[in-house]
Image 1 (cartoon, rainbow, N blue to C red):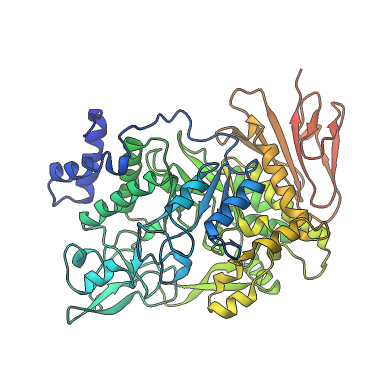
Image 2: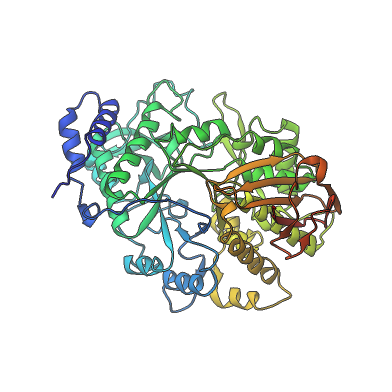
Length: 580
């Protein structure tokens, strides 16, 4: 049964469909879309979205098998570990692609509606969702060459014969922005005829043709299915490259933005508590464009934050981090940032474009290789190559080859996480940042892929042993990060929509003030970016015009008459201010 919708909702969806598919009948397209209402039980009883997020929200990013135990399905192991250790710290678990795949650690999807049998099944994911919200990946740009969709394409079977982007190899593709240094087109055999298909990321990942509305409706069906299986947040993977037009850059095209807006309207209509997150690892101004006018993505990654934090802690100077943070625009109503320092991919280099000088960017890249990391390259339109991402674990990225003091490294790591947690938005933590995982060079050698350096699989028994061993780095980092996230979740000043003010202070300190929406809670976060003791003046910097306060992290009271605060090397203070 199709519900009645407000006329403006129907009109807006119809207009979006016409802009995407001007040569198709609007009413037919709209009818197909509305027939998805109630599919898989989604939309039959939609909830009410009072608030999409608050200060209790945070995200753990993990593969379904990042932690394994012999004789147990990995998704069962993940649930047990999360229930035992993470319930107070995280509200959401982002389970990275758990579908049958042929390459790219899950992002070359063979079957969009199936859980890999070696991980578990849909029941295991829904069980994980009993105590956590869930984030799933919607891998829209491409599908596996080994999957059934592409096999049916090669047999010229409808509707799949028109699912993938075909291209003429004799045309000029020099304007196309490339995220990889691999061939853009790949030759295939389609029912005995040689064709060339678009392969943005690899020969095994064939780009889907959203110029065909059948592809859109296929994914609206997949999206509805994910919502019925517990998804609360949908991550749109590699969305920037979605729409193809020869003679353009094929990145951030107007149709791509229009399609994201349509997805937001669709989920708002059928399940308004759903959040759309776009994954666009591009320069900052291009990234924030995916907010639209508050009508596009609900949430975008702060892709510039990880490399800026890395630069600040490598140099002991927060100048560029502070300048960038001060210039951040206010997200439109109903939108927010997802703040993070590391993910399953590497640390993006492109998001630093224009934010730090080229020589300092080169120093960051060199610093990563000094610490055992790798550098992945992309092809430029002029035929040259440039760094695309830095492949290294966050723990090793914050080591110091000149001073291998483990305690200082741990402090640097915790400082980096505190910065991310204090910023306006929702914090997200990758499992290997939480577990202080070192570079997995063995994994790189075995897989031949640079990204494997940050995708280790922990044995459940080993990880639990290390967490119980007070001499291990895991026992130093993991519980303190959990404690900081738990402290954060109790403070209304850390609501994603609370005001943020970046304070000017000494170069070795990053200072941010958060004020709750009702003005009753103020927290000043001070982060020492150096290996030296810092003295932070308070009064003349308009940092602490209160009658004192309490450092939430140490529990130490700060006098109303204090004119300065001292920070030990890499120390963090979250000072809740008191007012008369």
